Length: 545
Image 1 (cartoon, rainbow, N blue to C red):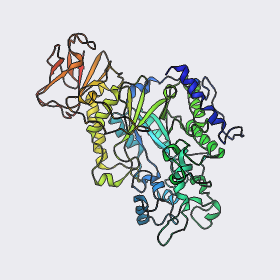
Image 2: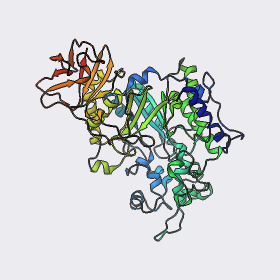
Image 3: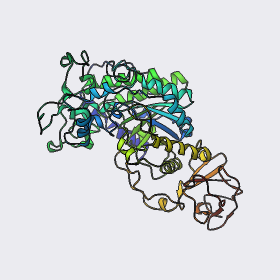
Image 4: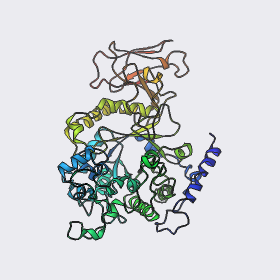
């Protein structure tokens, strides 16, 4: 589709904004930074991804908040209110019934008593990370920083009693890493709707969970004087269920019978996020939304992007920042950096992009540890190479325990990644895609398509020594062989004599080793590896000059 047609297509979203509950209403929003960017797609699409992000290639993410306190995995604060679910049963056994001990109480009990951001970020730097991302809030609506617009329900007031985002930021700056934050709170309005329910069975059937409590209900409680609705945001009608014609996947983007947030909620989200950006000066903001927060029912997300870009121009003299969004069309991909969740592109993308994934569950899950079910360092390294060959970055989440530490299995994985990067990083960092991304059995097969925000991770064939991925930079092409061949011979068909991709090869080196014997024939570039295998032979880099 041509650019003009795409812009016209985006203009079709304007009626949706005009029909939203925010149209024509007075706003209590903070002012948006002024500058060259307006909160429109034609204006935002002038964005250029900064070189620091293109060169960085690898970031590590602490997707850490109060839901990690239970150490029971993803979406705990929603699942604990779903009668009969694994989270619900675990919650009953550990904390009690959710009518008596709700998620607000889990937050209150969370202390993060062993958190040492300096040590962890230092470890991640040794692993090769060039940027670090901290969770600023999740769908649980609890801010992990000193939040002026979520003044009671934030980590400096309840739970740890610490500015977690500030601690992460200071550690990242100390270790010379770019710093990012992830923002997920837009969905609390519908995500917490399970907290409005009650058991249908058992001795407490019909007793409401705590999702509709108000400030008036706190007399004599630890939360006296606080309004649970500032956290839960459940003073509204429920979204339509499947039986009522609701469609969950569409509700994630505010259609399909979703209960639509009111303007006060939208303005508060905007103010919280502007406050976060202005107070912590992140280099990157990751939005866990279809496109942007509350899109397409309001322009809050576009205003946040324009604010960040304009602020960067004013403070840094240029647009030196990155915004991540999901499920983007072509114009939106020109306006920010496309993020693919737990999935990968199947080609060299014309614009920089990012995949986010995790070695375990997004929120720490002790069952993953007990079952030794983390991704291996080999899997992470193969993902990194494949993503970089296609013009992307890898943002890797390492789950953090409730107390603020990582376990010994995770540490071993991170350290092994660091050992591999120390030898082979030359072909990763500061690189650009070659003319093709790779060759071999996996490249020759049709890739499993993405679903929604991504989610095609692990669905393609595993890599082997027959698979090769390419990057370019520093006057060379780097061929990453995804395993050590049994016969010690590598044939790179794309670099054959007389081929379209590669002219005469004058030198081949094993990165971290030395010069190798080779011959460039009509079959391919044939390279003989050393007799002794590399310490981590599941991915080796050949520097081809």
